[in-house]
Each structure stands twice: as C-alpha cells, then as structure tokens.
Length: 469
Image (tube, rainbow, N blue to C red; front, side, top):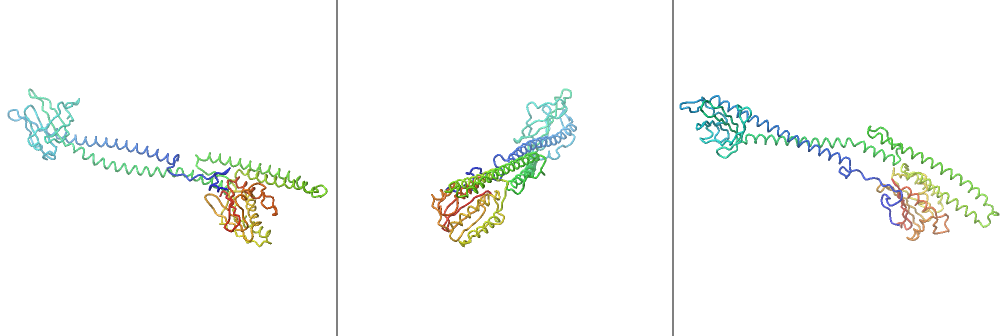
C-alpha cells in the first residue's frame, strides 16, 4: 500500500492543521492593515511636506521682500534734487549687503535720464520688466523678476513715486539674488525631509506595533481553539475583547451542541448494543445444546453475527465522535497496560516485548479506540512473533506514529493486501476471526489516520499506525 501523506490529507475525514499565518501572506489582516496604514502615512507626509514647504517659501520670501522694501523706503526718504534738477541722495545707502560687488544686492533710482545706482552695480544698470505689475495701492512696492548685469537671476522690488510737476515719475528698484531665497529653502527642505522621514519611520513602527497588539487576541483565540481541538480544554475561555466575545460565544455554543449530539449518539449506540447483544447471548446459550445444533452451523452464524455487530458498533462509536477532535489520550499508559496483558497471555512463548514511547506523546482519539487499535496490532505481532516484539512511538509532522514489529515469518505484498480486508485470514490454524487489522484500519481512517504494513528489519511484519497528535 502507498504510504499516506504526513497529515493524512488523502484519507476520508482528514483535517490537516492550518499553516501558521505569515505577516505578508496574501489575504493577511496584518498585511492589509499595514499596507493601508503605510499608504495613508505616505500621503499624509507628502501633503504635510508640500504644505510646510509652501509656508516656508512664503515666509522666506516675505522676509526677503521686507528687507528690500526697507531699502526702498530709505532711498525714497533720502531722495532729493540737486543743481540742474538732478537726483541725489542726502546720505550713503550702500550699507551691507548692498556694498558687495556682484553680490546681487543692488539698488537703482531712475527718473528720465537721471539715474542713481549702488556701487555694487559698478556703473551698470538693472534690467527691469517691460510692464511691472501694479498693486491696487500704487504707493506699495511691486514684486518682479529680473536679470543682473552679469546674467544672474534677481528678485526685484519696484516702487514708483508719483511725478512732481513736469518731472516724470521716479522708479526705485532694489534687488536680491535668487539664491538668497533658494539657499535657505534648500537647507530648510533638507531638514524638513529628514524630520518627516524620521516621523514616517516612527509612525510605521508604531503602526506595526499597534497592528500586532491589536491582532494578538486573534492569535490567542487560535491557541485556545487548538487547546479545544487537542482535548486539553472543553470550551474557549470567555474572557476575550469585546469585539471577539460574540464569536467566542458562537463557537462555544457550537461546541456545546456537538457535545450534546455526541452524548445522544453514544446513548443510542449503547442502547443498540444492549438490545442486540442480549438476544445474541441468549441464542448462543440455547445453541450450545448439541441436540439443537448438531453440526454447529447455527452457532457459527450467531458467532458471525455477534462479530459483525461488535464491529459496526465500534465504527458507529468512532463516527459519533465526529473525528474525535476533542479527545486526547496519552500513549504511554495504554501501551504499558497492553504490554503487561500480553506478557501474561503469551507467557508460554517467552516473548520479549520492547516498548519505547516518549513521555507526554498523545493522540486525538478516544481511549477505548486507542486500546482497540493497539491491542489488535500487538496481539497480531505476539501471535506470529517467534521471540521478540518491538513497539516504538514518536511524533511526526502533526501526527503520532506507533510502529509494532515482530520477528515472525512476515508477509509478502499480496498477503498484506489480503490481511487488510475484513475477515481476511491467512492461516486458519491460528485462533482469530480476521477482523483485527481491518477494524484497526477503519478506526484509524475515521480519526484521520492510517495503517500501513511492510517488512520489518526484525524479519517479520511491521505495522505503522498514524494517528492525529
């Protein structure tokens, strides 16, 4: 027979345990929450960065314009006319930073052909816009962009004074280099980006911690359900967060309903067993009289009926357990009891029965069915073994594996298939009815397990029983 999959997924009723959740597994709640939070955080940081950058730009530009406007006010206050109606200044206004040569900080006053310049222009003129924008308040300086004598970009503030008499209007211009605006903005932008980056990392870390903390009750609920499935707890604890409490209540109600159905099924099975076994026992007793059954044919029929009734009652009991996902039986004690029993039963053969089972190893099966399955396998090994029987149990990929081996004659492949059939007997000289291995196989499959036969290194048969852990 081909070996079953580790979890028995190719057997009827097999329920392999779900794989552990991964953080970024498709469909993961953590993944959805984290990616949604990351998207919102990114959008928020980008919007905040743009808004703060715009505010910084306006603030730095306002500071720069205020400095240039102060220069224009000082020039307008010092402006006078000298001989020949020529413009002149009452005092020197080439203070810092307007005293820097080719620094971009300039001022210029023009009225007709009369022009006054800062020393930083070195006798050259500023290029003004063709039609500088006009504010509603003509007395306020107007913004503008221009180019310096050396081709550098300038930020301009232009103030036009109203004409006096026949004189044309005077145009006052103060300039600052464009880098005076871009440099501070660049430095502030880098600092802002670093701060927003650190803030984003902190928000992402906080979101991850929040998601993990928020979903921790679901992981605890999974462990609680695993405890119920393993038979270590009858119900899911009711002490849960308010959002999970209704779900836990529904799960516990389903567990209670299944327990009630199980109890009713066991009662019906017990009633059926009592109703059938008593008449069969009466018939067996009546047919023990040779006069009523001289050839023993009726006794054989009654014996066969009794065996079949017992067999199907065991199947009904196992099926009523619903896969026995809530049962739990440790293997050490049943194997020790069975070893002691078969030591006495086969004392005349002087068999050496070796048992090796780790402490705490358990199966999700009813204790009576565990005794039935293991008893059939060990009894079969003791019948055919010549002097040694070896029993080893170990965990394997969510299952518990019990291996029973003997040093008897063993079986070939075809004989192993026949031995697994119900009622299949390979040697009529040995006591038995041929139902042991088939019953064991059916019980194991009802629990999601399997039974395999192969050759043992002891020389005889090796029966490997897999049951859910």
